[in-house]
Image (tube, rainbow, N blue to C red; front, side, top):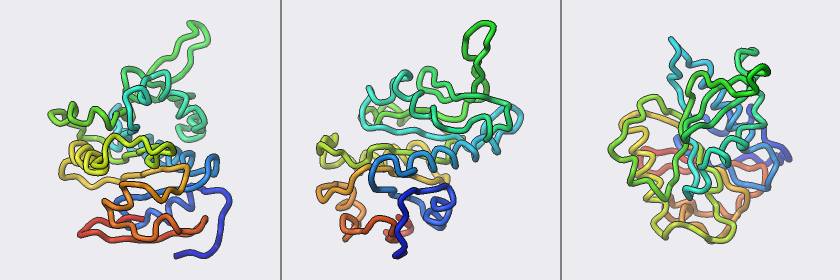
Length: 219
């Protein structure tokens, strides 16, 4: 466990924290860089994996409810990503259309967004059963935002099992990274119980703790 406290979380911090981990819990106050770091890192990996017009390291963006993954809600989530810098000016923005995430450019002449390579897809945990028969062979990074419900509005007490089923549906027998991002530390969280994260709610800001459950490493 690290004792040094940090106010802002960076991509470099994320790379250190996630090393050797399958599941990465990032918990803390809002606007401290957690989501930005995860988005920047996974979108950079997505861009660097593009071959012959296909992204081989796509992103799954997961939220609890269907309303949270509407295109109009999801697209602003990616608005702060430095797309031009990441893509070396090949693309200028990220567009979400029919729950699929694309690199895109804004055409000044037509005043329309022109979508390019698909780099991911949006999923609602409440609709997890609808994805079971589908295949997602290129997704390798999964981001679950608002994993800690501030109003204790979890789907059921079995929500962690539902997330695990969705992860299994998406990754199948592949290895991937699962990022769980929460903006508060709660003493009432089904994920702490399900994953055996004893003492998780008492971790100080800026600190890291590692757990191992069977063959899965959680940080």
